[in-house]
Length: 132
Image 1: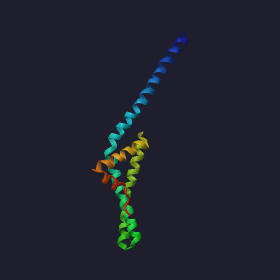
Image 2: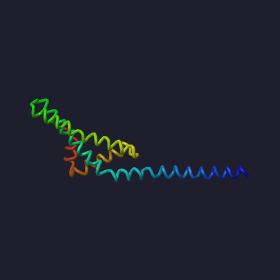
Image 3: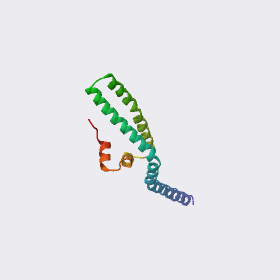
Image 4: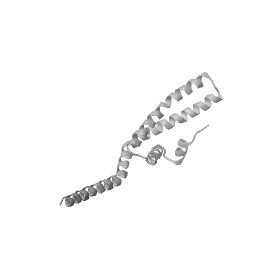
């Protein structure tokens, strides 16, 4: 009789394991969608602020290299300080990766953030364009 009890436990535990794996596998996309929905707004703001800071820094750096005045050097230092928001963006992104999002989901969130503030194609292009 002990072998029947062992077989019964094996089937019960094996079935529970298989059901748990199936639930986890099917639930993962739902989990990712929920994390994306919950964090879209704050992540989108960080995307926007970092994008603006990088653009400002790049343009200021270009202007300072063309005409290196004291005012331009001061503006460049301010633009460099403005890049701190990109650190916040990076940390938030790492946190979302720890919550189970992949780079594909983060990319979708970035595109949604850009689309949310752009009402037409020209604004989307302007967002991605670096002006010299």
